[in-house]
Amino acid sequence: MLNLLNETFSSLLQPFSFKYLALLAIFLILIYKWFSTSANSSPPSPPKLPIIGNLHQLGQHLQRSLQTLAQRHGPLMLLHFGSVPVLVVSSDETAREIMKTHDITFANRPKNTFFKKFCYNFKDVASAPYGEYWRQMKSICVLNLLSNTRVRSFRAVREEETKSMIDNITKHCSSSPSSVSSAVNLSEMLETLTNDVICRVALGRKYSDDGERGRTFKKLAGELTLVMSRIHIGDYIPWLAWIARLNGLDAKFDDLAKRFDEFLEIVVQEHMDEFDGLTKNEDQKDLVDVLLCLQADSPIDRVSIKAVILDIFVGGTDTSFTLLEWTMSELLRHPRVMENLQNEVRGIVGKKTDIIREDDLVGMHYLKAVIKETLRLHPSVPLLLPRLSTQDAQINGYDIKANTQVIVNAWQIGRDPKSYNKPEEFEPERFLDSAIDYKGNYFHYIPFGAGRRGCPGIQFAMAVQEIALANLVHKFNWALPDGTRGEDLDMTESSGTSVRRVYPLKVVPIPYSG
Ligand code: HEM
Image (cartoon, rainbow, N blue to C red; front, side, top):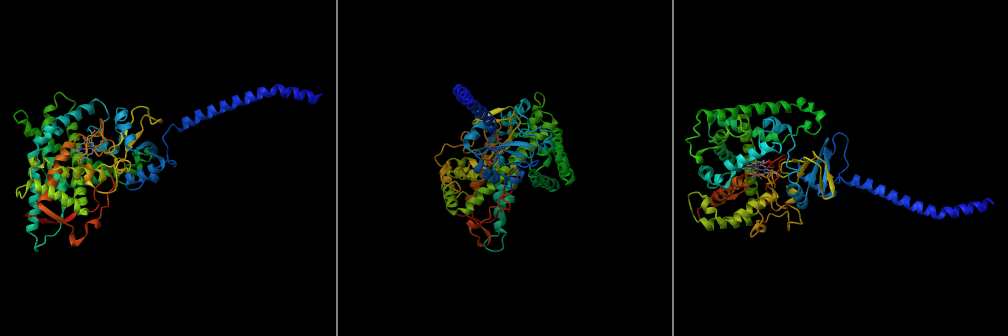
């Protein structure tokens, strides 16, 4: 009887339990899918440690560490620098998403201690939060200092300063006791050249030949470069900010920012004292003159003038001089390229004894390709400047939360084998007859960034590069000291926001007489 009941009950239940189980299974699968999708909606992340997050996985050369991690986790990866979420972008497609498709969402900059202390609480262009103040200040800089017309108007400054560098190298050669001249510190000369051009254009005078003040300025600039590469732990783990007080970094920041401010105060005051902006011809005005003139109907005040000067100085000098330094290094390592370049330049201008002027540069396509190729392999700012998302966004199906920092690894993108044949080789020919420009339209080549926050100084920078390089390779042949072969030249890179040679470039100039 019991058996009979059991059988009847099970036979009644069977179809129901099958349906029930099937429904339950579907329900569970849906729940699982829903949870797993929301768990997977963040980009892939390497495992992190408490407190420091992924900081232990990063080495001295951040761009290289990030490349290694991206090779494992993909072109969009979420790291944590301490408690700060950092989205790392490592392919041209993902860079396009950030800097074009979602440009407005990622147009902000994260706040860090360096910019806070040195740029008067983010009153400069590079670190100002995305908004009306940034927009106005950037367009003032672009229109009054960095536009094509303005850049052309500074051409005499570039030609004079290039001439002065070439004269110094020639003097060095003729003062050498033996017939073969000794090595010059080319790094130092290139740094002086870019500093002098920027100072004359922005501040109205150069400081390198100005005795005590020149020395003060040089010291300040050198210290600033060093300080910029230091990481303030409080930017990533706020409750450990006291370490910067203990190890002296805060004091160093404060002291240097104060000395820089004193220097900038004098510059602004001198301009105000001799201010005759109304009678000065437009072309004769330097950046400080222009900013002082514009004060009346703009957000500019004395503090923002100092912040912008610092920006132009920081943004324009190290980046430009390191590019020249890397270009000459690559040319020394690749005699074939050096020869092609010299043939082009010498072929166009002949035996001209005076310096090459900007008009002579037209038609020097190989020269332009050499500079482009150097920037591909040695972008002066390999990780661009970090961005910050202002709202939630979806990139490639991943959810990116508001207030996520974004780092674009332009260094890695420039050596992606998908975009470049033999990417590690220095081959300027790849840019001959190519439409690729610097404006950030081709996301596999973005040494100046792209979109709203892209670099406004491209024309300014290129004008200095081209004239300096053309003259260096026209007037001299170059060799490494003590018979060192080009391929043995040490190319060790520094760490920091802008990457330069660790060892200064010392080279022997041999005057070329044709
Ligand atoms: C070879 C030379 C240079 C390189 C490689 C370079 C590179 C860069 C890069 C990568 C950025 C960040 C772009 C982004 O976030 O998308 C930037 C921003 C900037 N650069 Fe340059 N730069 C150079 C020269 C200059 C010069 C000569 C100036 C001015 C005289 C300048 C002024 C600026 C400013 C003001 C910004 C901030 C723009 C903003 O946040 O809106 N740069 N630069």
